[in-house]
Image (cartoon, rainbow, N blue to C red; front, side, top):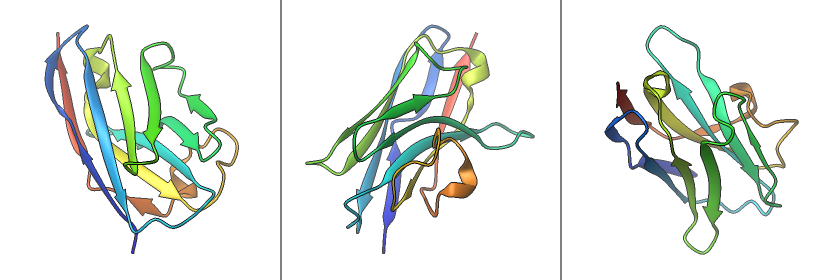
Length: 125
């Protein structure tokens, strides 16, 4: 059973930074796609960044140049480094995984079948 557990969320002022972590367990796929998604109240879940087992990455336009997705295979952990945070980045952030290479950008939620419980990020102005 694949389990994903996010951590690292919190409250920060605008222009601050946070690093989210997603610890994965029970994951035995040699090829995979993992992504970060976010959902603000009243809005649809949107893809933020994705990375596959080859290390290829993709980002939503709204976070390019500010967020960086990375992975530590030895620790089975996915990261999202978020810099220059803006109030509009406020949302619940989720990590997700699927046992194949990313399809296209990897930023479409319906392509994933494993999800974490989420971690809240709040950015104040």
